[in-house]
Image 1 (cartoon, rainbow, N blue to C red):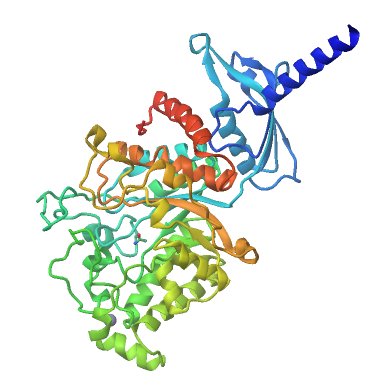
Image 2 (image 1 turned 90 degrees about the vertical axis):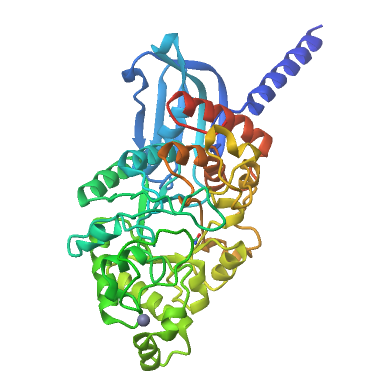
Length: 497
Ligand code: ACM
Ligand code: ZN
């Protein structure tokens, strides 16, 4: 009898342990190591919830250990602010409101966590449409909940210049307002809406407010100053900066797409202007990385421009592509002198940039793979998985946000299949910094629509970036992200569900 009883007990215990081991928490991204202990801890006040934090310098920068104990409550170990913020993100997702909102209940657990990749970002295009300070802060809050840590702020474009630079007041006078815009619903012959858009721009104090908000959340802010292309708004302000010395009208470009007018690389005034802009930007933004664009720069104007041709000849360059290469090298070195690093879109890999220039891969993973093999640090954000402006699912027309199918559908499930390391030999893995979702805003008119397009797809990238690719199956992720989106919706986010 005794032996049988022991066997029954052992079987029951094994079953219970297996149940604990297989139990998962509703967390996105899912932590590296989770032990569900059973039982709960109920916090009845903020004081109860205030975690006991200890500094453990042996933990990685964003790593943390979090314990929820039925008696002693919450404790966190981390090596600094970033780890503490990632632990708080976990805690925020773990808690369930109880007693009519008077208490919060947490599952008892032990979590040991760290990121798979150092770069887990969102590109925020404030130029095609402008979303403003509150939308930026809300996006940062949603990123922090998902342990995303890089806010790539696209501030200059053909269609607008959004950063007030006191030395160049015309930038926002002419560059921050469009007399009209191409109707975003219109894909065929461009139709203009006839409505002025702006002026919309950020002052230094706006930027400082956003930087402080991001720093509190442990999020880096990478400003992007596009060069030499996507520059019509700056050229509208200072027409001498382009090869023709003029535009048809002194205004940002009102269409979407790629403009032929780009900065004149042969004009010393252009180089000085861009250096001044970079001086201002590097003084204002504390991060070590500045994005210098480099994508979609047609060379037709440079071919016809005496100044550009003279620079090509004087420098002994072969062609206009090498002239862009000279600009990339110049600004990489200019930033390096300030202790900063340049990152640019993957087109610049075609003009032989210095190895120190970081590459943001967008046209296809093959460009990122080639760059990593040459020794560049790379952020993987190919259109195939990371373009959050693409239509999300067959239900795209829900909520009235439907636009003509101008791009392929990028479903949540497809985003979740991204593997930033796919096709990259292991000796080059160290060059793959991570990934980000790019939210271009030609077709996105309001902060509400911006949110709806980002979530939940950005949460899929957050999990790939934090937990690592292939760690969990889509079914498991979908169950967790559905709970996550419900929570976000309850807390005031406009998510797609
Ligand atoms: C890009 O989407 N042109 C970087
Ligand atoms: Zn020129």
